[in-house]
Length: 271
Image (cartoon, helix red, strand yellow):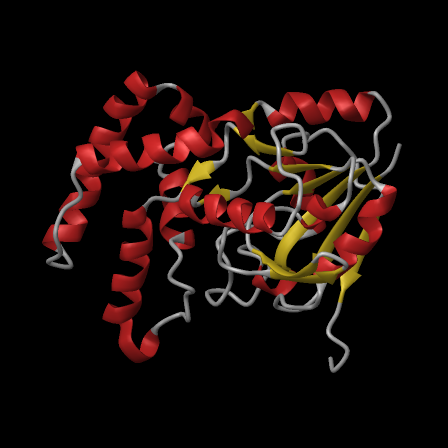
């Protein structure tokens, strides 16, 4: 049994994806523990060239289970696109080798629009957001106004929860930015379409990981971006909205009592 966390030492874009792809052959499970679709891990292997934003970089290794952890914010539409791209390239994707935490946060279209609108409002003072809704969705998480992936499997509860959230979000979308509000019907239809494609992958990944760890499986934690983008210890306010440092890995993965035995920091050569 071994646990290893791979994270960037700089601001991201250090080549972590390639490192995970290489080292994953020695591990049974790879877990993304934070972040969303705002950064890509580029991998070149015998299958081709790939840019993964959400799916862990161990997906190319046969027999490796890949987990999107509870510390992530997940755009279901973007995830579906990644899955379809990998399937077209002949990469095996199934609920057995790709699992999504039922406690990860859903990134909605209105999160992406709010991200873009705020960057536009800031003008020259903008943060340089990727406009993929990461900060707004993490903000909702910590305001207890987020929808969790597991709620996609509970449509009756989901509709009631989403209605209250939309009432609140539309106040900002209309009142602050002067844009068209989002309807409950359109968002429920969007979620239904997404759930039909990825619902089978959503489960209690924390319970799965804790069981696998107890059984002696080797687990790797994959970060997004680098330590200098950490929300607590990075170059604030020009950081990401989550914690890519290795110490957060067990929490974002759903197994907070586990010790990270090995940390691999990937650094850019020029620095």
